[in-house]
Image (cartoon, rainbow, N blue to C red; front, side, top):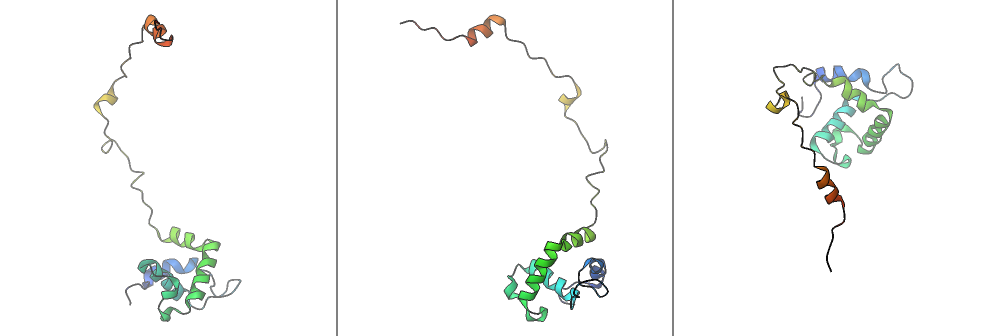
Amino acid sequence: MRRHELSDQDWQLIEPHTLGQPGTSGGTGRDNRLFVTAVFYRTRTGIPWRDLPARFGNWNTIARRFRRWALAGVWETLFLAVQEPDYEWVLVDSTTVKAHKAAAGQKKARPQPKHSAAVAAASAPKSTP
């Protein structure tokens, strides 16, 4: 197996969610596994579509098929199918949550400004000519 190719285990997770399978309506893809491998190869290496190795087929055909799958929502479905759920954010208990010391008591009351000081601050400053 080459470095960027799908393992049999990965392909078993992905295959039911691909388009163009025999027995479904519409056109059938020649080799969905080779196509998905080509897309993953491009994603992992960061190369442009034109630089795909010839073993994957015509780069333009692969690029157009990638776009059709993207518009049909296939890539999102594949992503949701293969990701493992992350329950770490759900598991919160008292052993992992600590509060600051100040969180234990009531907030201190701020002293209210005196009425005369508030009136003096709000009035316009007086100047002598």
